[in-house]
Length: 256
Ligand SMILES: [Zn+2]
Ligand SMILES: [Zn+2]
Image (cartoon, rainbow, N blue to C red; front, side, top):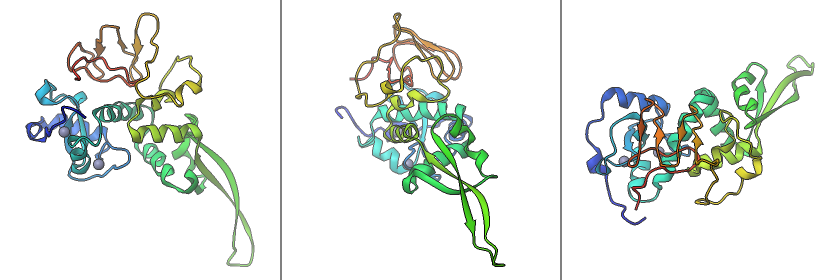
């Protein structure tokens, strides 16, 4: 990455404690890299660097563990991925509770992306994921060996990532915002699912006729001039330092 340099030094200024708490809460007190999720000694990264005019407000901040933070500042994790993680985090927080988010990532790590022996009591934890189509659950009757010689049938379930769930988790881990296309909180998009698959990074995406994109989270709009309504405060920023839209449309002009 040209122009990459270590910005950690300029970043180490004081972020207000309440803002820090807010973004830490947002990330579940874990590293925002979904492939990492390390919970300790988190640092707060500025998505738009302080030296570029990026501020200390929550929408510009992303908690990262020291490893992932350094990886980024050494050019190994692109800024686009961090911005995607931020937006996906916000969208996921709206769509699911923390436990469901952890289950999603856990499923992705399991053999065959499946957790077996889910009890009926445990099933509701998956319900939002099942409803969103990211996870499918199946009844799986199992026998349990009886200590008293009787064989019992126990009603258990399996939970598996669907193809859509796999694509989503892969995209999330890669920091590919387009993976979020099928997120359940997204409404009124008429595109078939094929459009969400296999699209190349950087390939232009058609907005509607007027170049307006609807933000996945709040339904706020970005117009053709690169103005986006701030996801937190509802204020608008234009030109410099605006946040990245979930769909990968970047409104800012500052990148070299
Ligand atoms: Zn940083
Ligand atoms: Zn990390």
